[in-house]
Image 1: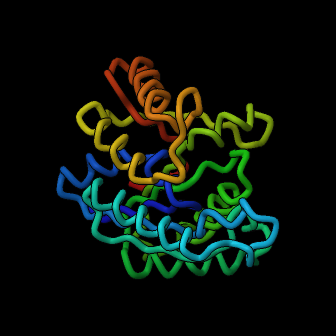
Image 2: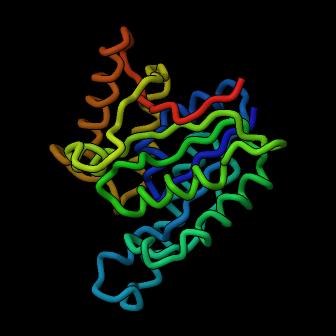
Length: 226
């Protein structure tokens, strides 16, 4: 099975479905990761002020995280961090459409559309547009994932709310997810931040306990064609 994970920023893929990615790879599926944004320039008043060496470090860390998860196909793009709303939606859609043509995924994982982060919202909208169910499309299933420090920080004030209805057992791959997140040296945080190892483990255990598992990742099924 071909699987495409669409992420707005470096680390979203790990936060949202790192354990699931590692499990899919272990099961022999072909997983591709696409990271649309460069992920760092919003920390500066002007995008041009960014030290390009920091962007290079972040891209290197993305490759390290993908290697830890066992993913060979990593695609990175340069959309402006936390400024996706300055880009024509069609341009974002075209990127994802190109990825779908080249990777022919049957399953797509993408950001949740009710997140606090505007880039996540636009990525969700663009993914739904790019995967619209037309005759001949390879995509049969679309899932939305949560991202710690974005989905919950919306406090369900933005629609749609995150209502997970699919849970993946990641007990065997949780430590791999946490190791991949630690590869993002500039994005990891210390407890009690939601991107700390302790909280990410607690989130997995919380979702696991909701469905009788030791650890799980939660997804909202957007669409499935059988």
